[in-house]
Image (cartoon, rainbow, N blue to C red):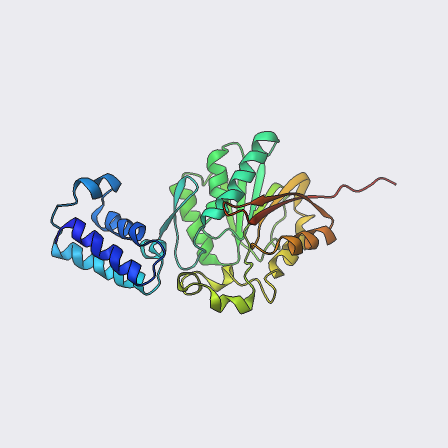
Amino acid sequence: MLLNQIKKKLSKNFFINGIETPELDARLVLKEVLSFDDKDLIVKENCRISEDLIKKIFAIEERRLKGEPISKIFKKRDFYKSTFSISNDVLDPRPETELVVEIANNFIRKNEVKSILDLGTGSGCILLSVLKENKMINGLGIDLSEKAINIAQNNSKKMQLDKQSNFLVSNWSDSINFKYDIVVSNPPYIASKDIKRLSKGVKNFDPLLSLDGGADGLNCYRIIVKDLGRIINENAIIIMEIGYNQSKSVIEIFKKNSFKLLKKHNDINGLDRVLTFQKKKMKNN
């Protein structure tokens, strides 16, 4: 069977079965199994593929058709400017979360920053992406999942950032005894009742711990903000990812805990995606 025939068959099967990006997924499968790049897929489209490789390709197709994301199948995902190892124990890094990294980098460029804290670090993608761009600062990533922390540590070593980063199993900031200049977080923010409505690729292959934000999806914001004042330096910035319809509620939660909104940041679809806050200054009597 020729490469081009396999590619067409994969794309068609993915399309018929409702895969959102059938041609892209077909290319990703072929590139991974054949160790090809995009140019190879064009130049070598008429080359004959061995039966063993064809079996591997269509075994992966079967997994994809059952809803397993390509990233989970190959245990890696591109995020910002790096490729991160992932598993079913961590949230699959999303493109919209790259906005958190960009906001942090912009703040670092304009301010004196020595430290950054990532609450709910997962694969470490946010923290490590920031540290890669800013070699003069150090960071800590915390997560309740020991398996997630192991993955983040492996990513740190692979990216040669292990001297800049540390990772800790902790229930949010409970185990933190240091003050930070930046706090970033992409906490669970899906309402419990909405989990069942998520796509198969999310609800079956991302950890529930990284998705479920409680009855209204806002539990984690309430927990995080309660202890923030203890772990931030003066003029520290807080960068929080939110659900598309949670802006007003999260702003109110932070306002009640003496944090002021700096800015709403929209994603590429024009939806509120990230909020930045600072602690309100105490007025002198």
